[in-house]
Length: 180
Image 1 (tube, rainbow, N blue to C red):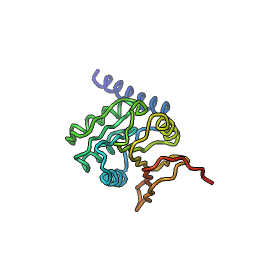
Image 2: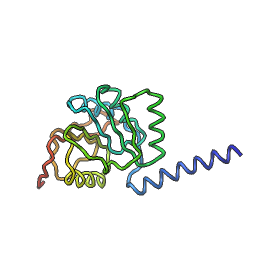
Image 3: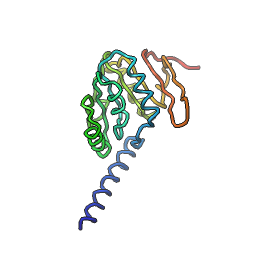
Image 4: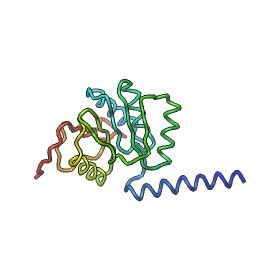
């Protein structure tokens, strides 16, 4: 009987992940350690006291940022319940009190010029993010892994220094540019 209940729980968890992956257009993936560390180092360079991670997946990036930036508060949004719950478990194990995980849509968050946004989002989500910010205000900084904001020139581009590391785009100015 226990095996059957475990099977049903696992089936439910997998079904939830597949449902949210289809709905959001991307599945939750843990961040590559080198990329997470590089993002945490970029965040450290900026004076803002709050970091907002957009789509935190399994929580590894938010926790890395928090551990390397203990004076900053990290607010991490994840819509898919299973990765969100796993993030809470990791947070308890790694004892990172400066992280708050929210099982919510990051597009409900009102950004201020005193916040750093961190994203590892697919292109469709980056478009939604731009539309949201255009109506509601921009953060001080955006650090985006792999995907750039279409039509906006990054302030800085950090190319991968090795295998299993993503390109980073950093934005401190959010002016659309006509690209030729």
